[in-house]
Image (cartoon, rainbow, N blue to C red):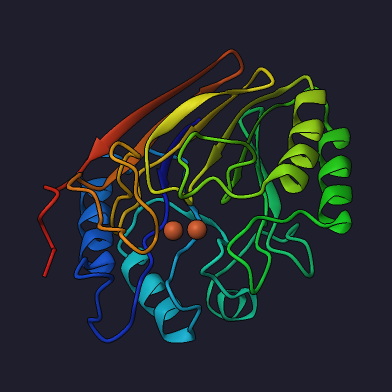
Length: 261
Ligand SMILES: [Fe+2]
Ligand SMILES: [Fe+2]
């Protein structure tokens, strides 16, 4: 399976920018690159923070841009998203949970599990009992299937002090489930607007740059009062998944200063 993976475009309507960065223009350029080089991909995953303010107009803008993408989109919410506005504008597979935007895709003997970690009103991740029960059922249904999981929030400490939140409850619950499932191969998440990889309890993970703007490394240290976006370019990723391998290519698609207004 070949995936395009994008995260955190943080779209705003009416040409507005995020601290001067145009997520709209950057997403349009990313989609142009995908159409040029990656129309053979199976899916285009967008792992949350599709829009910045959870408004319907921004999801309409997202759909307008993605209508040029030759690869079907699989979206999940992040902390900036609004479930009802997202549901009103985005399509989801028939097996999507009725309340939460989480679902699974099986193709060519490989499964993608898309999780909804949104805790409305909070920046932190959450998997309530209902969502955890759904995950249990999903993983138990076809335990032999090689599986990768996408969500928005990191479930563990990334040594990014301004961004490491109190994931102890959410993260432990998620990792307990995933690490106990023998065929869960990898976890992909967004939210931190940085490329990071490693493993939690033996489960490999990857985090990805934002389409919109990047968070700086913590050297020197910073906090949200002193936050200035990093002078680093946006990227999407190409992900190749087989039963015995996970390969991620990071693909910057413009300069750090392009579409900075
Ligand atoms: Fe974000
Ligand atoms: Fe986020």
